[in-house]
Image 1: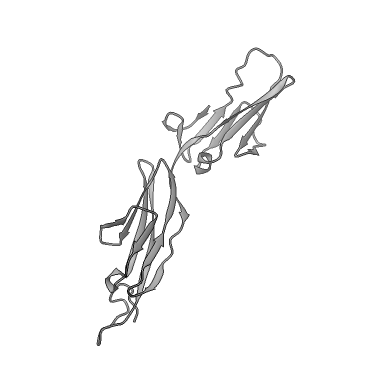
Image 2 (image 1 turned 120 degrees about the vertical axis):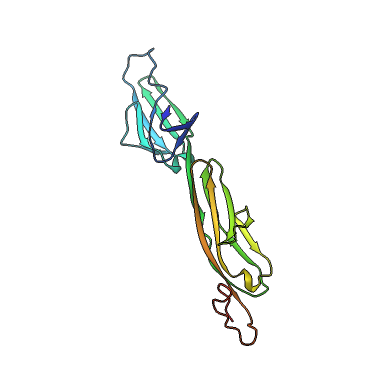
Length: 189
């Protein structure tokens, strides 16, 4: 059983001390030496050979099960458990700044992982208006006023938040006498 700073039944907060005790260690029917072998994600953890595995859990425990194999002269058995680790947003696909022509579409992609489920919000910096709640933000037929900074923000309730800022530069024609660069937050003539 893993123990840590538990936030719910069988759920653990990332980056906090935890330890696992083999449920097989309390078998009193045999008085023969037991050998323990711990693994995480299929890889043997050589540093631990007793009935307890103590570790600081992180986001990788969410996707890589922990297993304990107990062996004695009569045979062996293995128990594997997924660990429900709560962790704040981690960037899975970083969005890139874009430079597009006036009237073209601009498509930003921003992917996060987190547990429990996270919420993604795309906004233009300073506007406070939510443009998308998906990984992808599509701006159709961009205009000069679309140029500027955009923020992809991810929130894991009660655990944490993260954000990444990107720029949109719009290439286009200026009206006679206008000073274009920077006037529209990144518009280039």
